[in-house]
Image 1 (cartoon, rainbow, N blue to C red):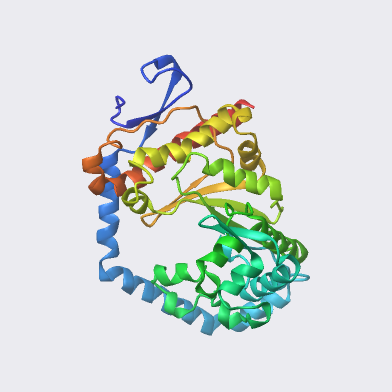
Image 2: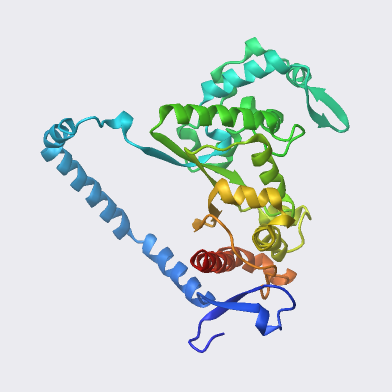
Length: 362
C-alpha cells in the first residue's frame, strides 16, 4: 500500500519478491473502490431511467431522420469518389472460427473432402480416422451437405442464449467437424483452419477497403497454450495487413476447477501472463511467441463478467506474478469472479506501463 492509499502491483525482474531493487511498483485501483464502482453501475442499470433515456434518444434520432434525410442524401452525392463500398470499414468482435460465411464454409468442406479425403484428421480412442471415414461415420457424403444442414447461421433464437449461440460453431451439430475444421490445436495442427482463414484474408485484401479484428482464444488451462497458438500462426502464415488479432479469455474457470484441470485461480493467471512476460524479457525463450506478439497481435481482450479489457501490442514485463488470496481454496468459490475482474485488470495495467516505458526508452 502506498502513502497515497493506492494498492501497488509489482513485477519481479529476477530474484525474489523481497529484493526491493528488482521489484517495480505501479499504482493500481483499490479493490474496494473497484467493487464500489461495480455496485453503483449495477444500481444505475437497474433503474427505469436508463430505458427511458434510451427511448428518448431513439425517438430523437427518428425525428432527425424525418427532418434531414433528403439533405443528408444530397450531401453524400456531392462527395466525389466515395460511397459506402469504398470507405474503409472495420468488422469488430468477430471470432476467427466464424469469420467466413456459411456458404464459404460449405464450399471449403466440400473441396477438402474432394481433394484430401484419405488424409488422417483425427484420432478417437487411439483409432485414427481419415476425413472420408469421419463423414461415413455420420452417414454423410460431400453431395449431401447443404447450407441448411450445416446450421451455422446465428438467428434470432440465439439471442441471449449463449448455449445455442455456441452450438452454432459445430457444423451439422457435430463437435468432430468443429475440431477438424475450426480448431488451431487439433490432430492436424490447425491446418484446415489456417487454410480457410487465409482464404478469408485474401478476400479482405481483394476488397481493399474492408478490415477485420479476428478473435482467438487462450483459456489459461496450461502454460504452453501461448506457444501452441504462436506456432500455429507462424507456421501457417496467417498474416494480413487487413486483419488484427485479438486474444480473448473465456470465463471457464469453474469448469476447469470442477474437472480438476487446474487447482486454483493463480494457476490460470500464471498460464496467461507468465509466457507473455518471459517472451518479452527473453525473446529466445519463446521465439515464435515473440514473433507472434510483434507482427500479429494488436490487443488482448479479456472477456469476463461483462468486462472487456484491452492491452496494447507488445507485452513488457519480468518473470514473476503474485496475488494475495488467489491460492485460498476455501474462499475462491465466492471470490474468484471478483479476482478475475480486478486482479487481471491490475496485471494488464502493469504490463501496459512497462511497455510504454520501454517504447519511450527506445
